[in-house]
Image 1 (cartoon, helix red, strand yellow):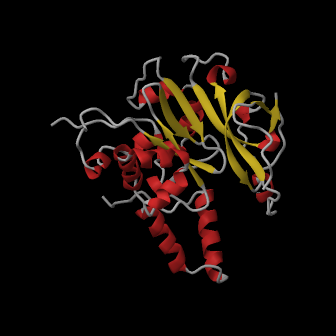
Image 2 (image 1 turned 45 degrees about the vertical axis):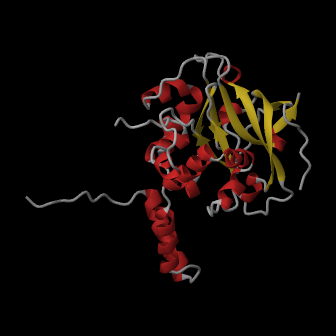
Image 3 (image 1 turned 180 degrees about the horizontal axis):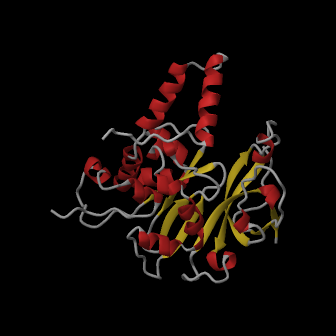
Length: 95
Length: 199
C-alpha cells in the first residue's frame, strides 16, 4: 500500500487539469485549496480501472475539507460552511 | 374508451440494459435466476437498517464512538455487511449539520438505506447541494440558523456516508425500536432531522 504523502491538517490544492477519461475529481473543485480532513486508505486508481486495467499501484485517497467561500467566492452562507470531497493523491499538491 | 396504459418505447439506456442482460444470460455468464435474486436483494434493503444503527449509537455511547471511528466495522458488529466500500459516519451536533450528495453520479450507502430516492440522483439536487446547500435544505423544510455550520459531503470516490442525526429532546427513556422509528431516510442523508411525533 502506498504511503500517504499528506497528513491530516495539511493544506493542499487540487490540480487544475482537464484530462479526458473517467475521473472521480469533480470539475468544480479543481484548482481549489483545502485541508486534509482524513486519510481514507489506498484504493485502485479509478482512472485505470475504467480502462479495464488493474488500477495498481493503489493510490492514497483523502477527504479534503474546503471552505465554501474558497470554492464559490460569492457563497451566500456563513464563513464556516464547508464542503468535503474525496480526492486521490495524484490530484493534490501540498502547499 | 380503450385504456392505452402508459406504454412508452424503451429509452436508449433501457434498451442497452436489456440487451446486455440478455447477452449475459445467452452466453451463460449469469442465469436469469441470479439476476432476479440480486434485484430482489437490492430491493429488500430498507432505510430501517440505517435507523437501527443510529438508534444503537444513541443508546450506547461506546458503540457511537466505534461507529464514528470505523463505520464499516461498527455495522459488521450488528450483522450488517458493508462489502468492499468504506462507510464514513458524520455526526450532527449543535454546531455542525452534515448532508450528503454525490455530484458525479449517485453513490449512496445502499447497504444501509436501500435504493436512493429519485431526487438524490437528479441533476438539480446534485449540482445545487454543493453550491447553495442552505437553500436546498430549506426547500426540504430544514431551516438552519447561521451559527450552525453546514458541512456537505460529496461522495466522489470509495467512501459512503451516513449522517448520524442528533437525538431529539422528548425521547428520554425510549427503547431502540421506538428511537429507530423516528430516524427517516432523509435524516440519514442529512436533508431532514428526526422529529418527535405529537401525541
